[in-house]
Image (tube, rainbow, N blue to C red; front, side, top):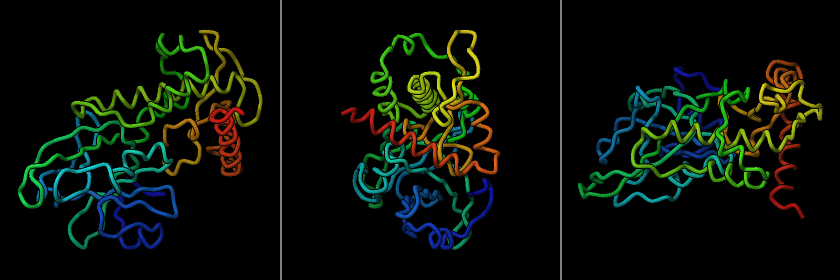
Length: 279
């Protein structure tokens, strides 16, 4: 959909996808997208966004020019984006009236709070969202090869694993942004373990059994992000499925890939509806 590093005209983005044209946090009403725009003007309000290069985390400060920032409007939209099935797409401003540069799709892994002046110079609390690229760790996640802790394996019931996965979908309040990557890894592990347990060794798209057993005796299935708009994907039970390698490759590279992905989305939606309300 968007290419990292490519420049886009913001007006044209909003003409195609909707969303407010002035706010830094701009949810679309017609697409499952939240646009984030980051520039240098935050310095005027006591904050500055940017990459933490050594960790691959982008610090994004919430909206609100006067008084303490609160989890309302755009800030609430970012915090709840995984739970609500919304994707975060970040653009970097190049200057007033200039195109914006696409930085990628992200997930909000964690949150912390900082002190700084508001527009009038009064000290207030700011909210900082710790954004991690959504494609981070995709290879291990999709192929379900990352190690699963003993604690997860002791969680024997599907409902226990589902509850854990849903809790993990929400950003964690942490003391510093460096914890964001580990939080994201934990979220992915929780989602992966639940999805594989839900599949019970059977492809959730085709109904075929897993093609073989792994060395630990568990069925080999790959975890796939459904309907992802870029190379990443939202880590949430309703957005992930365990499927065979052949089905996985066909979705990504086959002529009927989009049709199969839509079919899979319907299957998982029904499964999750049942698990939410078994009656």
